[in-house]
Image (cartoon, rainbow, N blue to C red):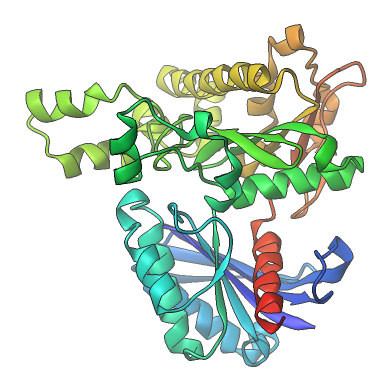
Length: 416
């Protein structure tokens, strides 16, 4: 067995877990991996909360002021070294797998981290400003804490979308210019979308090679993907994670001329425009209240807050637009799969997304939908009716296990 620490470092949160991996060179099956321990730190940048859970489901919660991702990493290290809190896992860690959001054109699969790899990841910071700098900080902090001889692997969100065909990833810019500058659609949330597809395959016992899926990763960041025969062929995010669906604080797709208009007529510089689109827009900007969908649903239903209601309607409308387009790309679908914080925990949003989609054969079963909550990581449930020709499922996204798999695969390749 190999004990792998998985680190998923975000702008305001940090998820981490310790996995026992066995099974050597072949692709691991669910029975060949075990999540021994996992934790989640939220509220980075202020009064943060850390929830730890062991493999028996025992949960403990801690609070501490955490200024940034570096301090969050140190807190994680302290907890892992505390034998009373983590059963001494720190001493047994043999490798670390890191989620990295943007891999650019250089990285189309997971790679072992060395100085050159880390340098190339840093060069992509501007393309994922909310995420890649945090990933780099996490890698450097753990190299210091565990020593530079500790094997570490970078698993890229963009890698899963490397199979998107040229006609789908190419923007209608002058072709030579676009290739020279690397401007193209990369797609993100790839680890999550791969996890949703695997969850569907486990529940239905349907081989991905024979399946046509539309996956919806709906959380603070939101994206959709088209998966045909197990490969991504289209996705809603593009050159950066800003394109596509309405998100918690990100605008999603807007007319590109908006940027120039704001700079020319509203005295905003580029940094201010980027901040507006990435951190002040989306559900937060429309509602003027919150980026949290549960807060907005409560405000709309109980307080009749019209701005909260508008934010919800725009959010679901944009998803339906993409859903219709993706059904055309796939020439139909076997299933749609919901995941992410909103996708997993909000039956109301799932119902709103699917309402009116009976024309394509999608029928949600209201009872199944309401009961499909609080799934364990990697768990899945069907929410469509038996009469539905396009099935609908909820899968509890399990990025950490997939990152552990990829880390183990890279280590085995090194030994080969």
